[in-house]
Image 1: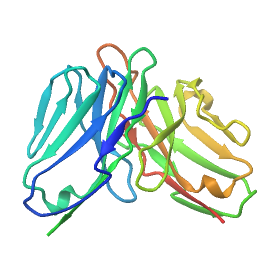
Image 2 (image 1 turned 120 degrees about the vertical axis):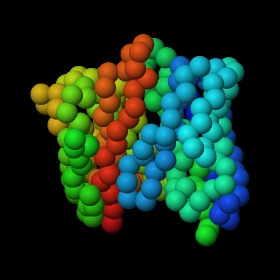
Image 3 (image 1 turned 90 degrees about the horizontal axis):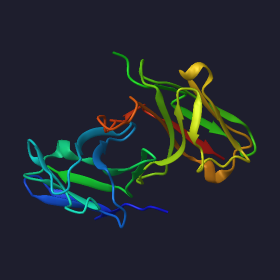
Length: 111
Length: 117
């Protein structure tokens, strides 16, 4: 069974702090996505990374896909209360076009 | 443009009762997914449809779960009989066909929260 392990599982920080969330697997993915989910809603796509070593920036969020396409990280600079939510990575397996979701990281940013 | 619509939003039933969830995907999205999500965890795929064909149902507990997508648009997920461990959020998602040039953003509905007593 393919697994995407995220760390940390929970994170509570003060507004203005930086943080990094990790997504690791022993499997290779053709692409990897990051989603954010707020309570009572479905996940919403933040970014898709496709190429090994790729780095994408979305305002205060920086996403990186590992060179071997087995892992990824999400870095948030100067976190704000609006960043609070459940962050999910999702790897797309090649050939089967099947998404495997990570275990999730619950972030709480305190004002 | 309307997003993915699911109903009901909440359902409370007693164990051994049946329950059904309905999903209307985004117009034009051929691929439809049903996921199960436990609190604070990542979604787990139950079944994936390409049009009306179930192309991946390997994680669907077929003894009590069933799904259909007649005419390749709306879909229904049924549980009969429900067990205590089925309490979770059932998410429906849709996407354009995933291929070489489309990495396929998943568009999720708000989910149907099931509580089995």
